[in-house]
Length: 321
Image (cartoon, rainbow, N blue to C red; front, top):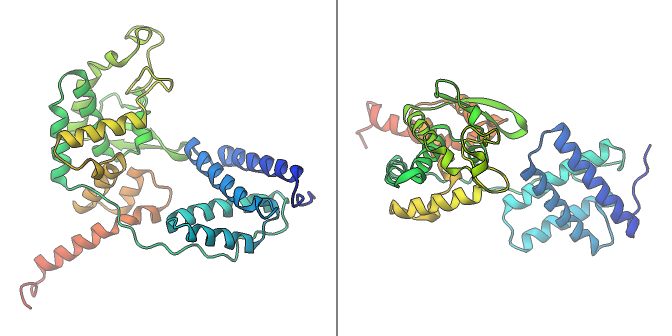
């Protein structure tokens, strides 16, 4: 049985670093955590370790009082409850790992309640706003316009996460061009159908796709990029940052406030509009790639609005005060 790590000193810091690395390795290997998720865990644990360093403590020997003090400090700094909740979630997983590995004899987070979160409704665009964005994309001349149209049509037709969209392999597209196979969080695959507009936009874009390849990646060369939206950057595909920039420019060209438009807002718009037109939560869960139906339930406000509208228009007493 492994003894708990010492409370302070250089050796304690080294062990903390080693246990954090082991935790991250476990999350990657056993849970399939994505690189962005691992980076978030690392930042959260580094922040907690920084808080403890002034108290001559490490994560291995932090008490419940230390965790409570950390949450209080975040509140006093004015951090959002959602940030505190996320960091507490990271600590819960880390301390559970330490307990399972017998580094600690207890878990100091078991008696701590999560910060109360107000109900935050997802931001989404109206159908008219999305139509305006799609129309504006088609007015961009040349290959750049065809690529932007394909990106927008895919995003709105599928609700992909932006990371899934920009790194989409060319091979993800089915032979008939009507479905994409997406590898989402945790390496899980899901099949997402494309509408006619998205399929047509992709077909047009593929005719000019090679213009976005480097000279060594032109069609017919063995080094041709495997990505649907290749780039000459180090990742080999259009970056999330660049797509975000392009989307802001598109919003401005369409006369919309660019602050209201983002890849995630379009993902929310996809989900909200589907529900408004009769889709059910279970189907939406599969399309969005949510592991838990509770994540998809943030869109229940759309169902509530639809039911209210149904009562107001269809109930026999709706016209009476």
